[in-house]
Amino acid sequence: AQSVTQLDSQVPVFEEAPVELRCNYSSSVSVYLFWYVQYPNQGLQLLLKYLSGSTLVKGINGFEAEFNKSQTSFHLRKPSVHISDTAEYFCAVRMPGGSEKLVFGKGTKLTVNP
Amino acid sequence: DADVTQTPRNRITKTGKRIMLECSQTKGHDRMYWYRQDPGLGLRLIYYSFDVKDINKGEISDGYSVSRQAQAKFSLSLESAIPNQTALYFCATSDRDRDRGQETQYFGPGTRLLVL
Image (cartoon, rainbow over all chains, first blue to last red; front, side, top):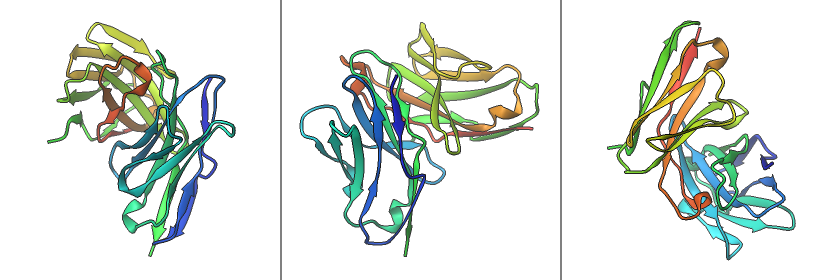
């Protein structure tokens, strides 16, 4: 069975600092990987996804993530955060070819302070 | 206008009451999902539907039922609400894809439910 671990439940940073939100997954087969963001009082929206090919994936709002198969990780990064990036971020995994289940991590709450 | 809408946005009810949460979408997607979100637990899948005649249980379907009235509408019912069903509920949709794993899910704004 697949599972997703987000190692940090809360990450506080100062504005314009870099940030990395960590995500590790467990699966014995290839997977698709996703990062979703949830702004306060809103639903989730897709930041980026890894399906195949280049291991560095660029998403919206200046975020990027790197797939590392050997470490089964898909960490999310941004070189310089803004106050508006304050939100909860969810990593999710799905199996190719027929699995309907999108398995979410427990989320990381990013707080950007001035 | 929002592509995925949920009604109501907030609801307070009492233990034992029947309640229905509704989801509508204008994206023309075949696939629809219901999730619940609890603090510190992420999102968990309750039910999903790949077309009007297709209903499938997710990982936490006990105590819930669903109805897919049309391609655009997918409702979630709690036949007899209990306090541990207090949560934030999300509807999501996705388009059909040759490889099911790849498609993006689009989420509604959520329904906050409190069961007293």
